[in-house]
Image (cartoon, rainbow, N blue to C red; front, side):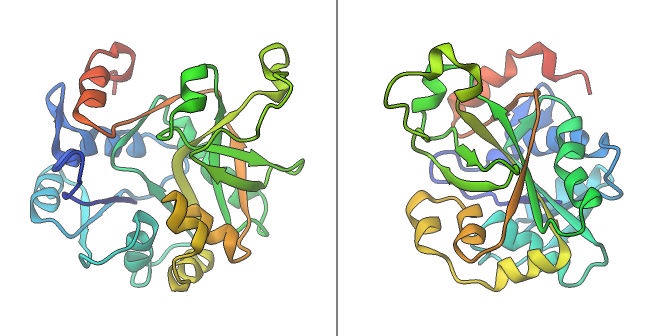
Length: 243
């Protein structure tokens, strides 16, 4: 499912911003259609412009309320009235470099019935990304479950070991979540947590209230659009537009 809103402080109308003849959200939806483990692609929005455009292109669309706190809450609103065991929240403003990222997010829930939520991380190779608050970092335990997500550079590298130790490098969290149905509905019933409000990261609500998140590893990148400048940079990446 691709939750989308039209309003944005930094980039109003972002989901419908055009990239090489298609709006951003349509490129995201095309990626979703190419995933092996996805049965159905649904656009969830409260905006007529988004719903109309995607319906005209033969996507399933569902109107949601305007008051959803986060994208996952919008997905949960739709899931309440839709059959399905696993629901994937795919960000409307993040282009995945490979459709296999979606399958990598879903696979842990299929493999292990005890996993309530899963997501994906990728090793950070750029020092600039480590310091970029728009690049969310994640720390996991030895069993690949998330300990914390942050916009800050975590973990702290006190002795500057990471440059010579790839196994100690930082990990970037990619904007995709796979929820087991009951975990998604439980998540939406929870109040906004203190850490979620501070970091503006919805996944911290899950951790704050004891819902575990499995983090799969991928070698494939993704590109998030937070500003018009990001969009212009994205347009020049030829490798992305083979779909």
